[in-house]
Length: 363
Ligand code: AMP
Ligand code: ZN
Ligand code: ZN
Image (cartoon, rainbow, N blue to C red):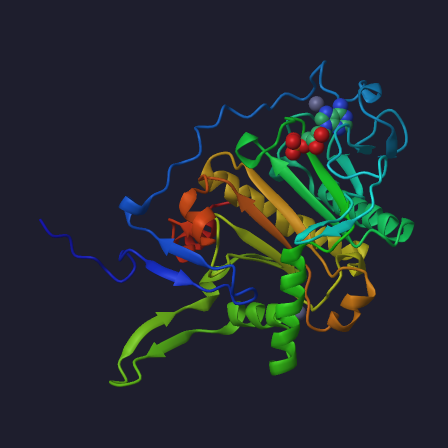
C-alpha cells in the first residue's frame, strides 16, 4: 500500500547549518528508522511543596554552605543564593596555570553558586508566578553584576538551570546555578566572534536579522535552472511566543527536538542592561513558553542557560553585533556516538512541526 504524502508529511532529511556558529550544525532526520534511543522514561516529577530532608527547603538553611543572599531577608524567603557544596571551580587551592609541551592547563579558579529558585520544593518554572520569575531574573542580574565587579579574573558568568534527571539535575528542589569561569567559554566566544564577522560584512546584528525574518519573511526558493518553485518557507512559523519586548523562537537548526530561544526584540548585547520593567515581559514569555513545552512533552526536563556579552575588554567592540539570549534545551533523547563522533546533533522532529505543535497549545 502506498500512502500519498503531502508536502508537510514528507520526512525531512537535511543538514541544517547554524547561521550564527556554522560549526554547530544539525542533522534533521524525521524518518522513524533514524530515531535515536529515547531518554529513559522519567520517574514522575517530585511535586511536593516541602521535604523535611531537602537541604534547599525552608527550615534547612544550615544544610547548605554559607548563604550569599536571601530574598526577602526574613525566614519566609522566596529565593536564596548559597555557595555550592561541591563546587566545580573554586579559589581554595590555586595552582599556577602551565604549558608543558603540547599540554596546557588553566587553573580551575572561579565561583560556583546555587540559586534556590523558589521555596517550594517541586514547583516547575511554568507554575511560578510572573512576579516570581521576574524577581528571579533580577536576582540573576544582581549576582552576575556582583561577580563581575568582585574579581576581574572572572571572565564569564554563566547562569543556567538543570531540571529533571534527564537534564542532569541531581537535586529535585528547583534551583539554578552560577558558574564564573577564568576564561570565556569557547561556545560563547564563537558566538561573539561569528556574529561580529557577520556584522562587519552586513552592518547588522545577525540575531536582529533572524528576529526580523521570523516576524516578516515568507521565502520562496526557486530552482536556478528551471525557475520552478523548489520550496516555500514561511519563516514566521518559527515564532513560539511573542511579548512586547521579548520573542521565543524555534531555531531553524535546532539541536534538540524542543529547543527554543528567547531574545529581546530590541537589540541588546548584555543581559545586565535589561531594565527591571522589561524583566516582567521576559518572565511572561518564559512562563508561557515553558507551559507550552510542558504540555507538549508531558513534563519537560530541560537545561536553560543565558548567553550575554562577556564583560572583558576584548568584547567591548561587539556591543552592536552580539545579542544576548536564553537557550532552553528540553532533553528528550540521549546524544549517541554519532553526535560525539560527528559533532552533528540529530534532531528527529522537524523544527517547523515542533513549532506548530508548541503554538497550538491552548494556554
Ligand atoms: P544539579 O546537579 O544540576 O541538580 O545541581 C545541584 C547542585 O547543588 C550541584 O552542583 C551540587 O554540588 C549542589 N549541592 C548539592 N547539595 C548541596 C547542599 N547541601 N548545599 C549546596 N549545594 C549543594
Ligand atoms: Zn526542597
Ligand atoms: Zn541584535
